[in-house]
Image (cartoon, rainbow, N blue to C red; front, side, top):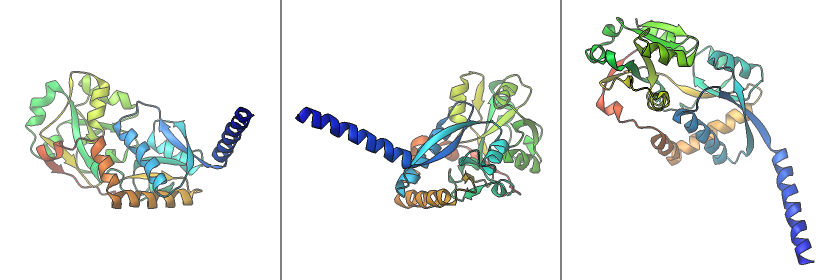
Length: 264
């Protein structure tokens, strides 16, 4: 009899938990169709921690989206997904609600150069931005960085395919691929090609912010995220998470080459 009561209790508990899950709000988070790097894992964990910090209990489902950033933001504006993250620009902030908390604390604008090792002697000799104009960079055709680099007089080739940018550097069809310090290290590991390297002597730096973007029909979600992120920052949990994911030593070893961002 006691065993039957216990089994009944377990079944009732399972039904209650299932019903509770069904009552939760489900948010659909855009997921790019490429390998996940430390940058992505950091953002997934930060998202969960921010919502937990304000007791906003939701089901999170991932929706595979087109790899082009602008198309994903258009999907946000059409209500096809609820949340994505991206570097901001005035145009992007018209498409969705920008949660104005810099997710990487400005590090998204600290750009190291991924090059072919055979090119290192040429790049090591660079001491100022004007000298970089002799080289050709590759960037995503719809990335805000493409316009920022071009506006500083750098020669930039816009490319549609993400992997093709690494391949062009390897094939010496382009000279360098600027990547944020929160991206480059794990990307080099994933590429697993001995001819790729990061120039250790300097990095580019321009003002840039990376935000969570939320569907305009979900203002409560945007508000909860903003409050949760503020809590994590004030408690120190945000910076602890940042330091756990990223090695920022290069910022103290290499010297900075400053750029302007007229779209900031």
